[in-house]
Each structure stands twice: as C-alpha cells, then as structure tokens.
Length: 202
Image (tube, rainbow, N blue to C red):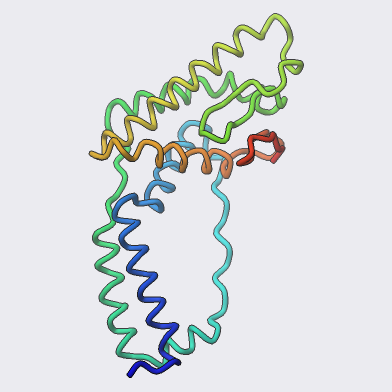
C-alpha cells in the first residue's frame, strides 16, 4: 500500500513523464536557445537574454524526495532518457542563414525607430509601426517598407526553422517562442505588445 508521505513523489514522477512527452513533441528549451542565438546575430551581442531566477531552496517535497532512494533512482533513469529523447533545433540551413543575414543588415536602419518608439514588437513575433507621429513625413514610406521586409523575413524564418527540423507543424510554436524571446532580448525603452495587444514600454 502506498504511503501518503510518498504521494507527492509519485505525483512528481507523473508530471515529469507528462513533461517528457511534451518536450519530445516540441523542444521548447532548445527552441528558446536557438531563438536567442539568432536574435543575438540579428541585433548584436549587446542584447543579452534575461537571467534565469535563482533556484529556490528545497522545501518539504525536496526532503521527501531525499527520503525515497528507490524512487529517486527511478527518476535518475527517467531524466537522462528524457534528455536523450529531446531533439535539438537546427538553425544552420542555407535558407536560415540567408534570412538571418538579411535581418541583421536591416537592423541598423530599424534600430533608430525602435528607440524612438515609432516601431515596436508585436505579440505574434513580427514588428509594426506603433506611432507614425514619431516618423518624419519624408521617412514614412521607407519605414513602412522596412517593416514589411522585416515581417516577410521573420515569417519565412519561422517557417524555414520548422521545415529544416523536419516538423512543418512546429511553425506556430517556433513563432510563439520567437515572439517571447524578441521581447526578452529587447533593449530598455523599446515598445512591445502584451498578450492583449496593448503597447508597453520595456
């Protein structure tokens, strides 16, 4: 009969198994790392990803885990298997490199408009003219064209990453991951859309 003190450990194992299934389907952590590498190439290395929060001190559940050596041994077998099963994200295809280079070349022209608040990052991983009033009349058509070209490259990038990894169905997940990482890597003062579509300043 299962002791109640071991119940949280069993639940933790169940949740771990569920996470393994999800990660094998779409490797979210690997996708974030790949997105950060591309964003650093496009924007420059001065844009650093947000630091992960410090690990919390082990609580009562952690102490129960230490008191269950047999279950811990089983977890130690499951975790390496999960890590081995999780695929990596390949971003080395010629098409991906070409799109990254195109976006990097364009960034020097877009960056002043990010900083002025005229252009912002949208919630769906694209960019948009946020405040036309911040753009002189003579420059508006050029900025609109920059935004259009950037969005074309971003949409193609998300599609190419999914295709290059043999999972075209990952495109929406790739886009969602990039949408989060563009904002996480953005400089202070730049504008982005929150989940409701409202503009916020970082």
